[in-house]
Length: 120
Image (cartoon, rainbow, N blue to C red; front, top):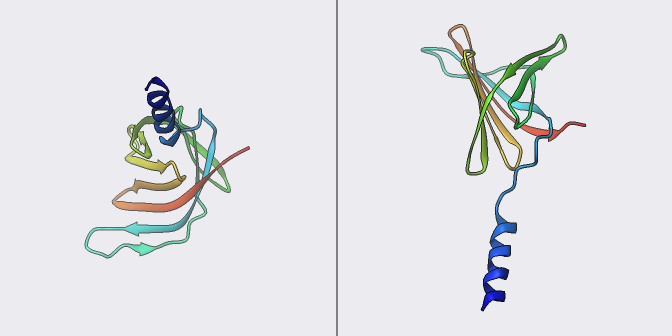
C-alpha cells in the first residue's frame, strides 16, 4: 500500500507544470496591435522585443537598446504575470512560453502576442 501511495505521489509531482529557476527569456511578437478610443485595433509593425526573467527583471528593447524595469512577478496556474509598477504595463508568459504584453503610450494601448525562448 505504501508503495502505491509513493508511486502515485511521484506521478502527480512529475506531471505538474514546473517553472525553470530564473533564466532570461527573449520574447518576440508575431502579432502587435494598436488600439485607441472609438477605433478598431489595427495591426502595426514593431521591432520591439522583451527580455524577462522570473526574478523580476524586465526590459523592452529595440535597435537603440533596452529600457530596464523591475517587475512584480506572480504565478497563476500555467502563467507568470509581470506587473511593472508605475508604467501601465503588464505581461503574461505561459509555461509553453507564449507571451501577451499590454502597454500604454499616451492614450494608445499596444497589445503584443508572441513567443519567448531562453536566451543564452
